[in-house]
Length: 108
Image (tube, rainbow, N blue to C red; front, top):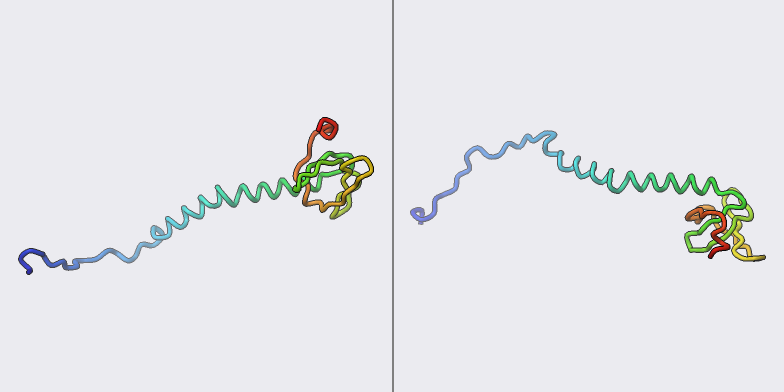
């Protein structure tokens, strides 16, 4: 059978000492993950923290649950929202999703 199929013999083999070049694909993947996933998420979290710290009495906000209201009182951990005349809701400060321009409640 050796006439039709030639025997494959290992000659020198591939070098096993790849060094830093072997880790290059892993380093590239980590850099891509950092710039596409980790960095934007950290920036968003930093912006949200700055937003929740800047909430003051009289601001109009939208919560994470979709409530639109005017800030009536601000504590360290909680914010009291007036969502209608005489109706106030106490929410956690972190649940404030965004500030809206003044007069948004009247136009809604």
